[in-house]
Image 1 (tube, rainbow, N blue to C red):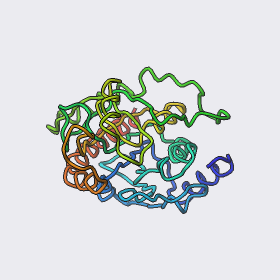
Image 2 (cartoon, one colour):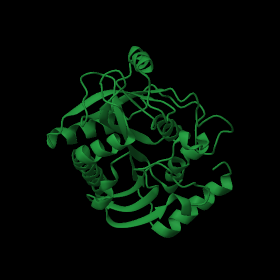
Image 3 (cartoon, one colour):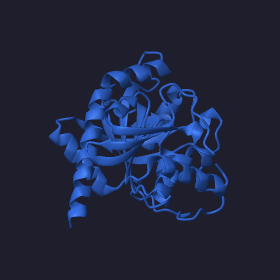
Image 4 (cartoon, helix red, strand yellow):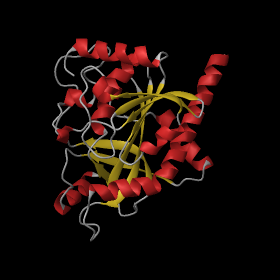
Length: 281
């Protein structure tokens, strides 16, 4: 999606279908599509029906906007995401985030599946992302500066401290163990070699995956509040004798996704409570 006209048509099309604009967005990573079932009165729009957006080609990423209410909060879910390894340009990868901004979304919760580099982390653990390392060797901000975006966003705190504290508090109330760590974003689609995993560990990464980092950059450039949760689905290459596969990622996501769904639903409930309080003032 390189033309501003495509962006405007995409926003108009979604407004025409969804009506009111939600404040909150949740991006669903591999194996987390079950959260859609928790959305009340869902209105679903496939990516391929949105002007300028391509369809997704990765198993576990259906590629849909889902508008509705989650635990009392007005939300839009991105059921799946686009990836560079599918052959998309960087501006296409972050187009859904930019569309959300123009729809009025000011807060986004990103989720992903990751491999653990920190040996404390095991399959099924949930990590609140504290920081990120962009190793995709590109930026969605390259090129002309788009309206309502900053070319040089401050990334000293890419994840909003207040939003992170809300996530931590919800996890504590639900008695869901929550780790914290740094996520490294790689281009994919091949899993990393053992040497690359050792390199990532030396750089300070705790988890590695093939998404999220570019979305965070685009969201911050538009001033959105961002938080991210990573579901560990496997140990990275060299830390386990197991052969890695995408099917394993989906299987662990389905098995451990229940706790992630419970946590995300609890976060949405808290966001809805905040919205209600703001409206009553």
